[in-house]
Length: 209
Image (cartoon, rainbow, N blue to C red; front, top):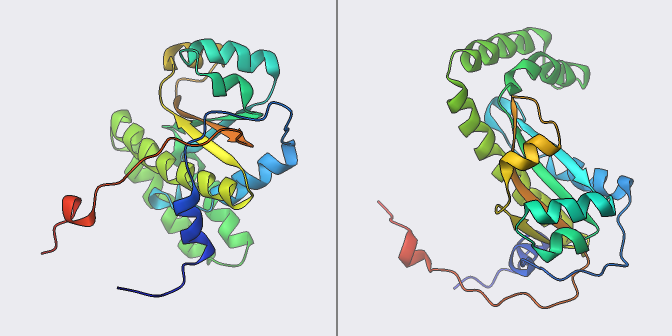
């Protein structure tokens, strides 16, 4: 058995729990939420196309309305912030901008950036929208997990909610055709204990070949 001391990252992985009771007096600023998202968006993504989009909901009336869309889940209204994670099926249209940012940062040659841009635009424009939808769903999972860990690192609590009326949400927030809601993430200071949970063992889920 390994006796290696666990890093802060590993400790946060084990400490993170889904919390549904929040301190209604605790508030998060726009700057604090922006920093959280900046950290989360270091997540990897397909061809570095970053197909995630976000709507941050802190307005009390908006949260109350969202609670009805989320089947009356209390934390939607009581957490200081709800972050809606969206996918963008037109993500490849940002390929040139993304690679130019790397050129400007001095981490990519212009010739390489041009080639990668052409490859991304050709590849992703040539596959069905449903396939790009799947790419965005997968990558949204990566950025969402990083958001949970970044929040825990700051002493904040979270819970991810997939149960909400996504059609109603899209209509209410006037989402364009290329954007679709995936999950809601409540963030704040928890006041109640997490539900006890257990995980299957490695032996239950892994095959070594």
